[in-house]
Length: 216
Image 1 (cartoon, one colour):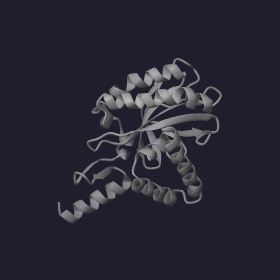
Image 2 (tube, one colour):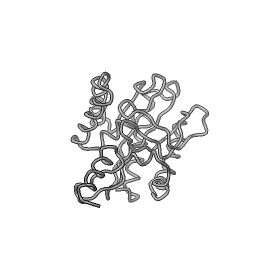
Image 3 (cartoon, one colour):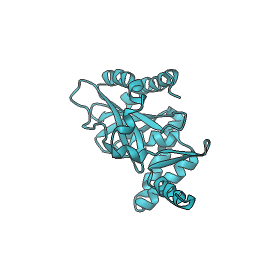
Image 4 (cartoon, one colour):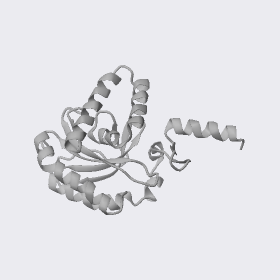
């Protein structure tokens, strides 16, 4: 194929989120939008097997749900869930999408990327949702300050008024997709104080354990 055709194709696929350019390597990799096409991308990854037992441990302690997710344009798509035996967990499964801007897990992802990439997300948000973008960006900036202070991002009724959650970013090397992990559930079962005082230390410890197990 002519180089001009290849350039146009890669440009279009990158804009749509199906490719992502790795500047440090001068190469492209599959983008997060490919996750919405099916599970074949996940089946070749050991991310879930590494994280799953640690997520389950936290889910059992918190009597809630712990999830691992990756970005898909303006959403986060769940790629792994761990539930406690409690019947009070959220009805979200692998493949479910939630808004990136208002959820704790989406805000954690934004906290884990560069300021330049976060600015690109703001531009996308303003293009796709110009009426509500200013309010959403203010909420994100508030969450960025929370992350600097607490080491996690929060969403207490911001995504859904009866849902509370906290989350942390998960960085991977080698050009792998950035991700985030949250712990959340019904607000009457998970108060902000309980999440910050009891769950936050364990969520941060989960992140440290992932790093020591070769997730870099």
